[in-house]
Amino acid sequence: DLKLPNSADFVVNPYKAFNNQFLLPALEKLGSRKLLLLCDNLNLLLNATENGRFEPQTFETFYRTIHANPRAYTLFTLDYPLPNDETDLLSQISSIPNYQIQTLSKNETIDMVKQQNEFIIFRDAAEFVYQLTGGHPATTQTYCNAIQTRQKSLNLRHITVADVTAVQQTIANTQTDSPTAAAQATFHIRREAPRNRTDYRL
Image (cartoon, rainbow, N blue to C red; front, side, top):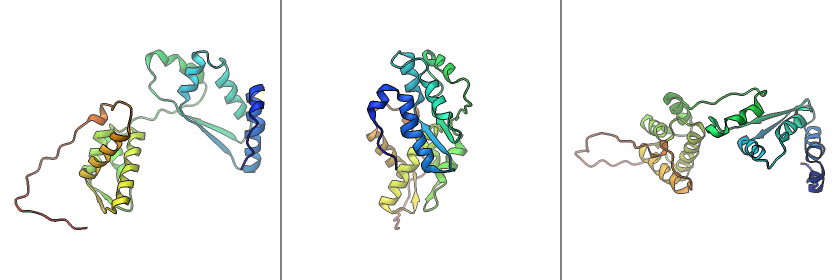
């Protein structure tokens, strides 16, 4: 638990206030443990700096303020690849070690989807998730979370393509952005219609 920062101090000197009112108290509370700060959507800060809404040295000063403390570390996320008109933003972070997360392969996506211990996900259902997400890690995780929610709410022992289709419709209904090409993918199963009626009971 940390005290609420004094916003007036941030107006006068935001870096000093951030260091004195957040970093140092947090590190003191942690004792010998390390502090890792996750800063998501770095694009927003870099774009704001590029557009003149922040001073040119904003990111570098913020970065140096944190790393002046030996037990403080940072992890930044950045959408990549950048649009052509934003590629010069990378020069601001060229000195920082970086790792590009690629889309998952089909088998990697299937493995990620099937890593559920409480219930079984059939392979064709996992393949359907790959077709819908194109192997994008975050989108795949969104489907995994939604599948788990559906499984728990219906107490399912198996996840089928029909369940993934229901999850896809739920996700589509909650998204306000235009769907990506991957989300518009379709999935077809060719099989003969059963000659006799088949009943399934859980």
